[in-house]
Image (cartoon, rainbow, N blue to C red):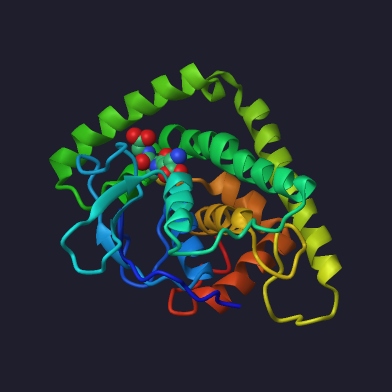
Length: 268
Ligand SMILES: N[C@@H](CCC(=O)N[C@@H](CS)C(=O)NCC(=O)O)C(=O)O
């Protein structure tokens, strides 16, 4: 069910666009877009630039609370953006009313994806499948710039991953950790789907097995969909597709909230 917004605001969501009516490769962009749609908050998409990004990361938004264009503010980081929009009354906090245990699971699921799987995905995309990633992520740049920016990105990612730790695992260790993360998520969704039972079979089911989405759902959908559409992480894509409930989960959210967007291909 779409929750009505309370305070009107003009929001532009900046990202690396990959064509009209299409999800993008960035899980964080998909997360924020999903979060806005779960609350039926209107927004427009714009082509982002790292130089204008307030925290040097994609996505970021411009927020105009008066809706008159005179006083817009640039905000970065999806979790902070969501918190701010809730605080401003632009959308409701989806975790209001959760028990302490549910809240802990919701935070842990988001952390699993945003603070752990995100690094695994970055390694697979930028290190293991560099040329495919460069072609997609830097498609808007002229060829020579693509080469230079691509090399800088590669070196930066390698340094970051080594410092953070993900760069120090063997390929086998990495594969095992990725599988464990997706398996854990899938198990949670299987439980949620079972809980939902036969009621409203067609509609989405949600990570915590409740009747309405929580904050974790935007993140989970964002990461699943990014994994399903991005050819620069084929191992992850294969893993996700090997869990029919994970794909079902995303398909039902797509049908309800993103029917104007292309669906991912059924095959890799
Ligand atoms: N915590 C940030 C993460 C965003 C993020 O890592 N974005 C990636 C693209 S998917 C990025 O901008 N990477 C470039 C960089 O880290 O320099 C959020 O929630 O917005």
